[in-house]
Length: 258
Image (spheres, rainbow, N blue to C red):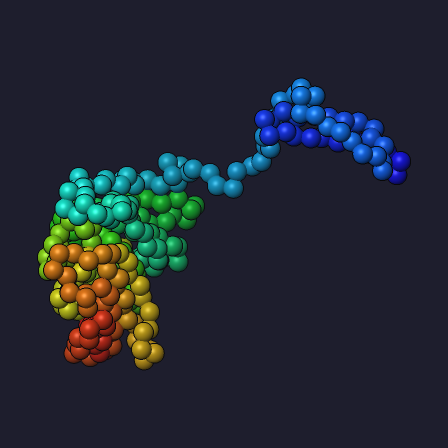
């Protein structure tokens, strides 16, 4: 190779300099003032990976409404608002048609929303849901599906939070909703022990490897007078109905109780 067909130099002030037909094995002296063109990045026309299709595929109230609460008025050293982190979502086939549906949590004063998938891939809101309307003063901090009553469908457990209510408040209790098999939920207070925790998430797992479904609830942050053992709580489900309360874990037996 006797020559290099072109050389492009981009200077720190975004000026660009072009040199053509450069002889090899030759030292070049370049000066920034000789660069007369402006450097521009040419946009690459690529098909986007994601597209906004909410209004085309989802029918119903999909809007999240945040309640008016400013954490800093009570805890001025917080790095950011813990009460306004947006809704949580959980998915499962809740009406037995082999299509994945989803539930969106809500802030305080709003209601949890259920959406069923249609055969064409779109979603429609399933309402009314009286149990969720009744519990609109709770804030949904985490949610997960499980078969709590062993009838083969997806029941829903929701951890409460929001950082507004004080430790020990009933509005910080996790809630269990039993599915009727068609996507309509009814609250069941018999199977969960009384727990009050400002939660951040909830997970379903088999914590102690006994083959039963356990529930892990993580606390968002310490509230006033919150005890250290309330930072994380787990419930274990078996087919009896007795409950053993441990510092961080709740283990029960299999009559649909934790």
